[in-house]
Image (cartoon, rainbow, N blue to C red; front, side):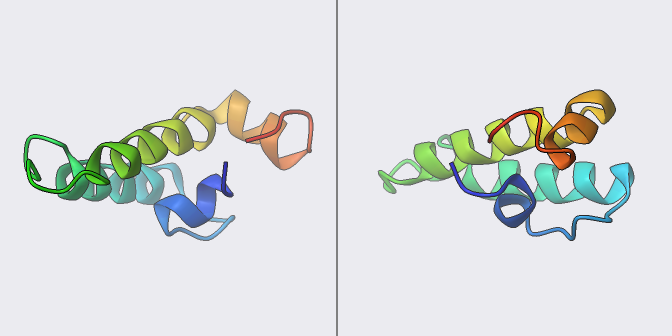
Length: 71
């Protein structure tokens, strides 16, 4: 998987609020229900979800930043 910060389009020092906002914008933009004719929308939506699972949680984000877990 790509770097979760890159997937969400935020900097590594982004606040939790900025990360959540970026995730919501991407989720809305790439949701499969919003893009029924785009076969890659599901993959982009899933990538945004995975990225947010990592950097959306403070403990998981800290572990990722320390290199303890891989994306």
